[in-house]
Length: 315
Image (cartoon, rainbow, N blue to C red):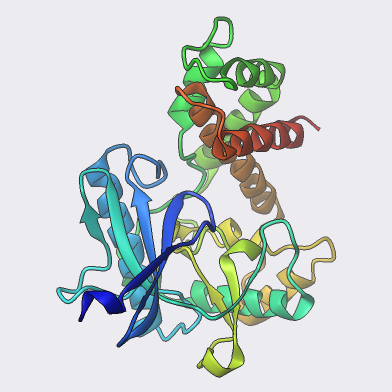
């Protein structure tokens, strides 16, 4: 392909990854994602482990779309050798996805009722797929950076060494919430230790929130109107790992899910996954702000999000 036909445009969207829109003169438009192997703690603690975990997740997404027939799965385009993700230097990876023409949802904005009903049906279809068909790990109540959070809790009595503008404010904020945070961690541990080993698990997306949903333009939708993106969190877990994100106060979504699957939701597990999400966010933001940093839009976002998360845990 002549070099002049290739165009790249950086897309400042989402969080935790870097994105480009690539247009070429022959194949159309693609969405390219670059991930930092040091920033995905839920996949592992070393770069090889994270790379392997990311590959397994994207391979599973590709299988779910091609073999299980789940047209709503936004899966990568594999390379000619079949790999769904490639190394990009020592610390990064690159994956290519079809470009989705449509309207993305927003994290803090609830989905319209029709879209939410469609999302529940999508999750029901995902949860009905045989979990033994994919090589995915079990991921239930673990946190991305629990070890970092526990170190931070132990070191609340002395200055943190990060030296950034938000380092000491973050320490003071966490110190004021240390009791509820420790109790939350103990709550998750008790549930995990008391849960029956034989309890059923399903294939879960992990983050089916509005920000990971795109309403594809009708002319391009094929068999799917809504598309579910960001499959790097896919794992085996109880269905409540997904369901807490679609459960409204009326309970209509959970009743609809039960109609579709025959499986009632565990209300206690829903609340525990809500707690796990807040503690997981906390572990990420504390890790970022304890490390050396400067005042940037990213660290300002981390600080504001830390304040919100602490408020949720202490109310």
